[in-house]
Length: 412
Image (cartoon, rainbow, N blue to C red; front, side):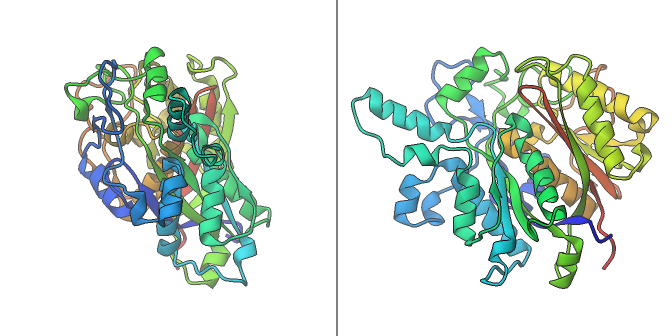
C-alpha cells in the first residue's frame, strides 16, 4: 500500500550484544546479560546485579572532546543510529537531509551525568558546564541529528518504559503526515547508577537474587520477585514503502499501526484489571487492519514483577479473546533486563527480526509458570515458526500503555 511505513534499518547496543545481529543471536539462544554491577560499587545495596552493556568504550566511537562530554545514554543512541543508517544503506546528502527526521526517546535521561556532577559539587569541585545539556532527554535525538547532519523535525518524548516503542508511532505519523521521508527513531537508556537503583529498590521493584544473577529476571514465572535493571539502545530507520522502493531498500517489516492509552490510576502500579492496557491492545489491532486471529507473536512487556505480568496477561486475553491461545508470547527482559527507555524499541526489533527469520525468541528462566499468566510463553527455548504479524507491548510508570503492530512486508 502507498501509505505503508516500513523498517529498513536497525542498530542495537544491548546487554547481550553490541550490535543488532549479536544481540538477536544471543536472545534467540537464551543467553542472559545479567551479572554483578561493574558501573559502581554496589556494596551494601539490596540489589547488586544489573544487565549492563559490555565492553562499550566511547573513545572507540568519538573524538577526545566528545568522549569527555557525552552522556552514556546519548553515546548508545548515536552508535546504534550509525548502525541503523548503514544497515538501511541510507545515503544522506544535501538533496535529502532536510527530509530526514530524528525521534529518539528516553525514560529517565542522563542520571549518570547528573549524579557525577552532584558528587563533584558535594566535594567542593566544579563539574563541567556541559553536564546540563548532556543530561537532557532531547540530547540523544539532537546528537544523532548532529552526527548524521540532518535538518528535518527532531523530537524526543519521555514516557517512562513506553518511551522507545512510542518513538516508532511518532515516526510513523511524521512520515504519513508528509513532514519527513525518513525518520531515525528508537529508544535509549543508561541509568545503572546508585541513585536510580536505590530509588527502584526502595519501591520494592528490583530483584534481589544477587547470588544467581542470570536467573534473576523471570517474567511470568511463579517465583519472580522483581525486575532487573538493564541499559542500551535500539534505533531504527523508518520510511514510507514507496520511498524504500524508489531507493531499492529491503524492509524488515511494516509498522502497521499502534495505540497509546493511560490508566490514570497510579504513578507506579498498573490498573489491576488492565482495562486500559486492554484498550491499547484492542485499538492497535483494529488500527492495523488485522483480526486477533492474524497475530502470530507478541513481544510482551513482561517485567518480571508480580503485578505487571499478571495484569499484562489479563489484558492480552481480554483484548484478543479466543485467539489468545494460539499466539506465541515471549518476555525478552528475561535475557536483557529492563532497558527502560530502550525496552520498547528492543521489542520492536524482536518483532521485525522474528518476521524476517521465522523465529520466536524464548522467555528464559520460566520454570514454574504462574497460573495467572496463562499464555503460550515460549518457555526457555526459541520456536521456529512463520511469523507474519507481531505485536509489541510497552507499559510505563504513570500508567502509559503503548502497543505497536508489525507485519511482513509485501514481496518485492
